[in-house]
Length: 85
Image (cartoon, rainbow, N blue to C red; front, side):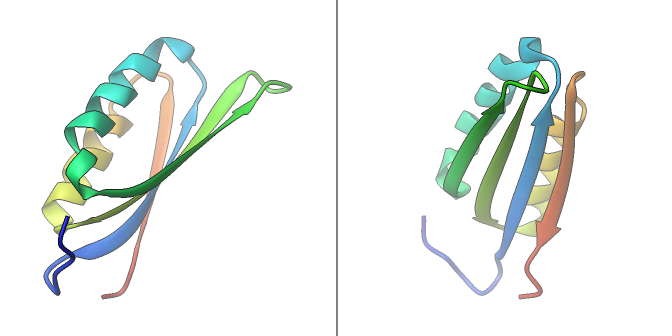
């Protein structure tokens, strides 16, 4: 991965309430591996959910594509925060 001025950094936050969608999440993230700077997953057993944060450096279209695919999964809630530059 080579950062360029045309890319933005974003944090994609995923709350997983249905463990059945974890495989699909991993498939989507694997396909975007070249843009991922880092990833952190936290199981929150008391609430029976998982929280995943993914930091990416990519073109806005790519970030939106990743977020959109994740957001369409049943059982996952997704929000994305973008850098200004």
